[in-house]
Image 1 (tube, helix red, strand yellow):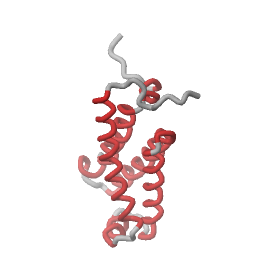
Image 2 (cartoon, rainbow, N blue to C red):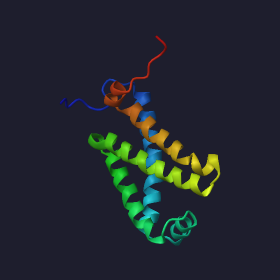
Image 3 (spheres, rainbow, N blue to C red):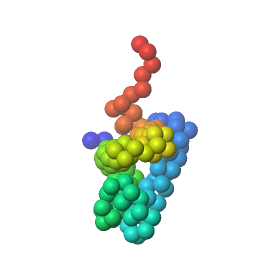
Image 4 (cartoon, one colour):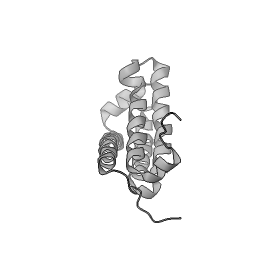
Length: 137
């Protein structure tokens, strides 16, 4: 295993764009996890409206926080992104089940997933090598 930095020889504008995307995602997830961990009444109302038990807020907040921490640590960022993708998929499935609006609720998990993977892909040379973007051959 190599100890090369994850950014490798990537152009700085791409790395910074990835960091900004990942940072925006991190701010959103930190807020989302935080309000769930604080047992905010808005969370309870929202969860029960979506068919989840009121007590589910705290465990979901723990999952979000764990995924976020794993995502922000360079060594575990890909694991964090994979786990976060599962969490976002579950949120999308919940919104599909209750008939939420498509662009603002159902696809929000997709938007967050694109920020997670896009930010990571732009800032991590190892992921770019694993999943290269190729032009038509």
